[in-house]
Length: 105
Length: 105
DNA sequence: ATGACATTTCGATATTTCGCGAAATGTAGT
DNA sequence: ACTACATTTCGCGAAATATCGAAATGTCAT
Image 1 (spheres, each protein chain N blue to C red):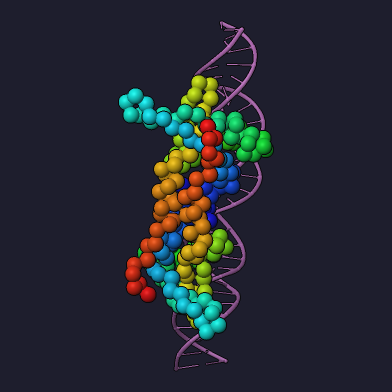
Image 2: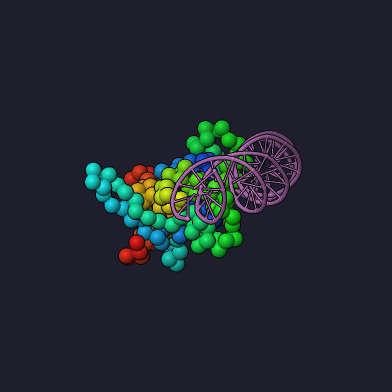
């Protein structure tokens, strides 16, 4: 995930996706449903201002998905993207915790 | 910083440095003194088990220093390394905060 | 079915990055 | 000054990465 966030384009994508809320609802069987989110094309427009080609954004989104940073869901003709909040929370926790044993120095 | 943490070797270095406390003391004029910490050679030994050459570790430490992730200080013949806790805290804060505007979706 | 649209895959290319080993630099002690 | 040691710099090759554009895939609407 750090590697994923390490690329400037992906960090911008990440930042953009965070400004769009990740709507979630519980289904009948208690399963989680993501309701909506930006599409690949929308990410491309908003993040790079069409500076980058769709296929490039698609590539980065795939990387981020494989890293577990985001979730991508099919919505008819589109693919909608959302930040994986649990994963990000874990990452924040890792950075936030203090690993130094007491009295180490 | 994300890019820095994205490399496996550097993440191991980071993790190792965090287990060694960053001792700090106030000097006579209120200036901050880092007291001690692992040397480059020690990092090389502990992190890679001598799998990697010193120059390689030096390269990574430089990257991490330029990224603002660690601080390196001259201590006579040695260079001692410590995590930049403020920077890491900021990073954790960035990941931890919720950027989605209320009622976005 | 056909056309329009969204996205992904593929191939090619340019750039970056990592790693090693040798040489250079710098410091401490004798 | 000389030696021993710690670290950095440099040159280079190998591998990974980012980007583009074209072609392929998949979906919706007519």
